[in-house]
Image 1: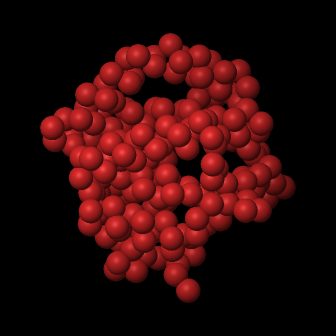
Image 2: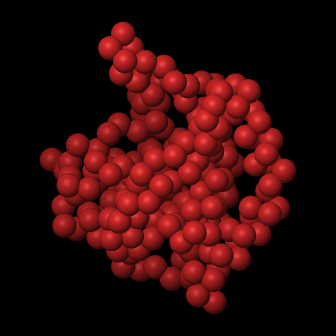
Length: 197
């Protein structure tokens, strides 16, 4: 079975079967965090081409005296933290998979501002569609350094296969259940990538 066909079947069935859960989460996000329920942001996809990722919102809109957003730790509510810990905030990305922006498995789509900071080797992570989960996620997630993550992403690009994807998906379920590597040490999420030093 081709990777794209597998993505379409799993994402389509997932959205259908999980629709009651999606509605429940959307209601809770609206009630606890307000509107909008969904977080949309431009991210680099395959070959660095931008697309709009869709996730459930996990942070409140809170700004400082200058109108700048507060740090993640101050905007991330206990409810939002729980959504992230269980990866439920990622479920709307199944729509991105159906659209062809993403795959179930691949390097995670990061921020557009990181593109000029990558080395030529690190940029190779964009040779494939980004994924909802990936090798870096099952190997430590935000507990890894950026350099370790990028090494794993490039290794995946060079060794990808249907069976490797199945293994990553299976291990992802375990990671979600045990809630490992949700944040980097001393951070609410993950510090920004500022380039390799």
